Length: 145
Figure (tube, rainbow, N blue to C red):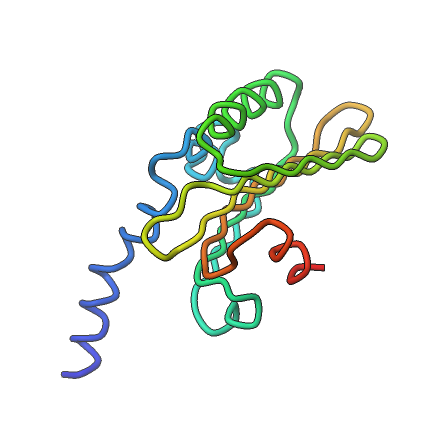
């Protein structure tokens, strides 16, 4: 009986995980609207595994993109950047990383990381959404190094 109650509660809470990213333009990348989901590597983590990093939720999607898909992603990230309270951009060769500090939801701080790497015929793109008690991009960088 307890097990059924726990499963029922989990079923009710699962949609809340998707709500975390809801107001973001880049959310379409997580739902397979840019690149089909069978061509992506998706990771979702919630719970104790993240407590070391002071995060409560981690969601990433990685895929190979053509020039059109890369342009679409760039435009979506630019739209999300407009609401960011802080940004950090790093470039080295054909690789770039952009971290956006998004407006917090209550006491929960939110971050969006956009990593790109250019190859001969495609782009490797990783998009990561994170939330937790980490209060700045500098602090986040120290934790994930």
